[in-house]
Length: 269
Ligand SMILES: [Zn+2]
Image 1: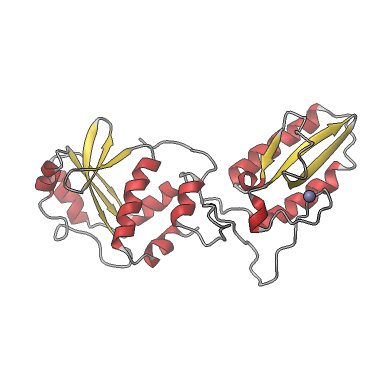
Image 2: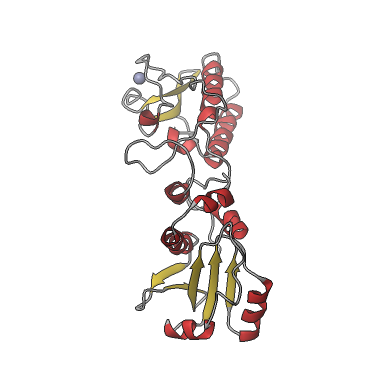
């Protein structure tokens, strides 16, 4: 995911301001609208006046743009200042803020892009990404093929012929391990088709949307590998071909590694 490129494609300043307010809430800070319609970020027991400006592709924000800083801080009953810019800020602005003696934090586009990799994918997908959406579902589903050829299907193992990588099916599909006597099975398909299985190993089951996140993919695979080494006498003749097929086909829709975590990764406060 190229966040800087995506910032540059935004044309609406208002969109940037909405994004900035949500960004701070997503990162574990608290962004609220003040009485005079400015945004204030609360962090470390302090209140920061938020100046969000969309200048990607244009010149750096400097002291000629950020005027009356102390007055604006006072008007919002704040203690400090946050500059949140999709492009860059000037050294002059940094020096000026230093000289004012108030707490301040400056973000440029590159810094924001780094933070975005630690956001939840839910938030990332609201503002970024070119993947397909399924109806009103907010997730984006990526197509990693660089040709126009269609994706190879990952067919539900029940034999119903449904492709669980089709956008409309992803949210209704899962993968699980099922042990029957000494046989281990790797099953994937629509939830409704696999309803009689509950994933009777300690690996449980995972939704397809979840396992399309690289962090979730890695942790579930670790669990599966552990289960196999904990149970060396299992018959895996049915397991391996199905797992191989699943892994190969799933990669076609895996999310980019910096496109957010499935759940909250960390707080920066
Ligand atoms: Zn099925």
